[in-house]
Image (cartoon, rainbow, N blue to C red):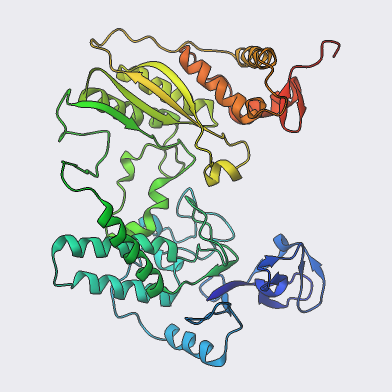
Length: 456
């Protein structure tokens, strides 16, 4: 079923679902501009006011449905509307999470770093992210799984499947696309999926995957803070791979809060290595937590063995924090390479001034803890000396003018890579780099090159 938020026209006060302001269900696309269904006035969709109910929650209306076996969605029939009304009037007879978001009874909407004015209006509790029917079906499925008379491992797998599916069954699922990853965005038009159909598919895929898992060998999975690993002895690991939290870019405890609420156990945020206004953590706190993690990694890693750190960030302050944490823990950065994953993440592809590729840092655990050598502070001018040399090298190698190596994202990554290798602090953020790059060098179709010799 497709639900749409209800909006009010600023000209005639007509209240209607967003779909009636200009959405074509045939080709599943939104019109270039909104049109009021009451007065016919062309409108800026951003100027439409959300309509709220008595509890200050944004009103929603069901606008399309699709019954099992049907290929296309269609308008709702009177029995469809009657069923929704009946469900809304009944209490859910099973336990389900209904606590305040992030456990904060604030008395106001704002509950965390990822809260946004507008689409989170009136969204204060976990249950506000679900339709009542979805909440009911998930609660019933989880209750059934907990009462299964079966092997504990099987029961755990069934519960795990239900909880994992829950995050894709929220109101964050867009009408004709999935939810946007790693955010808590609530779209204007959203899809309520058939919970039983989703769970059937999940169980089927889970069983297929279980048959492919190799048997034999010893694997230990632990869920705990990397700042303290007392269950792992000293000098026992041959290799460490880590993909640290990206500073302030993703607030993991908030992203995870919805599905963790179904488990009744949430992230211990005091150990979360992030930059957060709500947790009162700045760059210094982030560096301190990362230092504690790297110190534990160095303790458990055998001498003269290696740790790989996959990381990137658009902030030079966050880069300095990572460099400082590596140095204070005793690791020696020996190399840094660009990792081209082919497909950028959603945030990399959609966020202005984002970085394009991750860096892979190779850090060695020296035999003896030597006197720390802090990374040398560098100046913005050092970055432009590097770009000048890099573009000169590309021209000498006759690299094509449209080569990805000449784009702002790759040039920034190459600069960070070079500074890490030389033990220099990253001197400039991605936003500053991109802005000044366009002022200092010639650009053609998104690729940069040296100015011609006769240029002023």
